[in-house]
Length: 72
Image 1 (cartoon, rainbow, N blue to C red):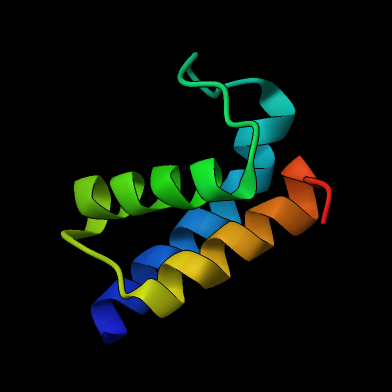
Image 2: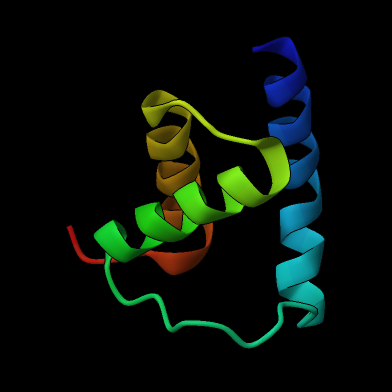
């Protein structure tokens, strides 16, 4: 878990600058919290091997709160 946590911390540290600079490559349009969780899970598999359901939910909640702001 420690190695995943440090990777997640690095991702969250870089996320604001990536969003601000427009460096995000075009991808699927995320329009719901469920779709965001699916993308977080996909990113987790690609970059960390896998993430726990708790980590996926926490990352999706953070991204939603700070960037997406989906309706509750």
